[in-house]
Image (cartoon, rainbow, N blue to C red):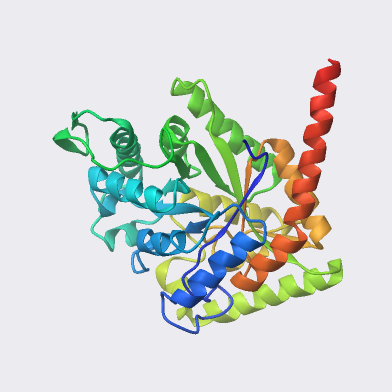
Length: 374
């Protein structure tokens, strides 16, 4: 049965964040499992296992979690430069078997040349997008073809490949993709089942959704990708307390980035990011701090637009209504992550997700009734 709105959380491997350093190893198994189970027990649909050049292998972390949870779905981030597509297809199919069909794969093209070169990838951005599109096509075919096939493309060439392991999910797991450049829209519009955006003002998000849908149509698709949008919710029982909490978050981020010693500033520029998505977040921040019902850009400005970094600030009711505004735009999946990852996952799951689900169900019933009368 289709779920009208879904929630994606963070499958972190340690308790560190932009506001505080981790207290244990990079892969803290106990914390990783506690965090995953907190999501599973508090209304979330899936969690993301992210990729970074020096981080624990997300595929193995995901397998660890999948074997110890029952319902929680997995979004596995993967960079095409780190393995050959036929090998990756087998890895994904095996993980989908371990999870009994709970896998979605998020393909990352790479936002900075510096980070890509750490693992031997010296292609420029548009070349990387072309490679990712070719890579996804190979993986999809390897997941579904029971007959050997050849491939000769711009980036990959092989002969007579057929896998002996196939996904549990039929016909295959979903493919997730993100990016805010024309090259990203072309690749993701053609291949993605889910297209991921970072949280921007409603008008800007509507423009990006149209760009994705136009790219899908231009690629000859009869369907369009589902849309996912990501935020950093900051909630409290009153508006005043929520804004106090939000200002404290920015102060803590700034304290960590001051002097350039934190990982965030060692890895990327806070003022001149390479990837278009981060540039967009900083452009929005330059236009103002507050937009629409609850969007706050100070967190993005403090991190240089690093990844998912725009906040939604307010009471649970305010943040839920802000998320419903995005749902009304056509957003299917809400990605949310707090700054105290474990505690915030529980708080958001208890206080925000039920409001959104109830309101979505109400709106869908009203639309169905209107359609029936029409």
